[in-house]
Image (spheres, rainbow, N blue to C red):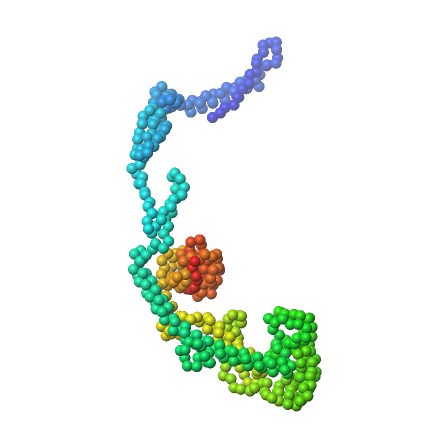
Length: 498
């Protein structure tokens, strides 16, 4: 414990000085200091340490920086030394070409360790199927192993997969060998000239198309003669004085006369409505010329009859023949090169409408012939297009593989796989998803590579999610654009590999 000063000197003076009287105040100061000092002496005696008890306590210690020896001196004078052997600590290392490590201490002592015997010597050699390349230098070297192009043969292939490939090759060769017959049959019905079918030169799509076009041209002349303009056509260039019906005759369009050259999208500022209807009185013999003006043909045998301004009959023939039709409308596919809409043929149509629809039918026949191609598929399935597709699909299913595929952490493979025929890749894989999958997750990786970026092809799936094929530099993968829930996931798609 710590003590503070308890007394200050009075500095007594002799008589006759009266500055330091011997009175109670000064005597009590001495009395109080004496008592306090006495208490402190007792306290110090009670808490003191006996010298005999601390003889083994450390009084000091010292270390020799050269030898590393530490000397500890006790209170009683006894000394103890501890040698750290710092002179035995290695201060230099050398490694020879054989992998022997030599360590030298500060006192010159040497120790050796053969670490080369613990490091194997690896030699990488190129082969006919695997090539080896290296980059970097020293201990920082990278080795790359690549399969040599076109080096994998039947010896390296799994026997089951090799059997599937041979079977697929034989099937393809068989289909190719049988295609010629089907090609000839298709050509016979399209254009004739194959000498394989009686009457094929006058009973084919091309022949009946030309007949229809000729009839349509003849009917157009008749319409031009009686003054009915054609429907507006965005592919036609019009000049002042030309006539048309817009939007169309079938839609009850209005007759117009062109006042300024125009083409493409309808521009009402380039046209004026004609007053031809004003001149078309029921029972009259008036017709419209190319300019839309009324003409008097002057002969009852050429009379044009009108019903509410629309020409309905000519003395020499019926412009709206009545006939029975069993035709039905196809689905509307309006691309210029694809299947076109064919409206149902009904009684009471004008000749222009009738032959317009007939020509559309033959256009569709020609497009269908082009899409079917000339390959004979009579030996595949039942010989029909749907039968051949079904048969090929069955063959593909039996050839599915999962080689090289990996899946997301929450996906478990159930069945299916992919098959590649040339550059064509067909994927049909079923997975069990143990939990929901966040967006932009690579669900299936390792598919044959396609040289493109993301969203290559849409993947049909049973969860109605936006799933697509995307690509890394060396392989393609199936990824989801939006989150999908847990459950069974079936992914199917077809694409062309690079």
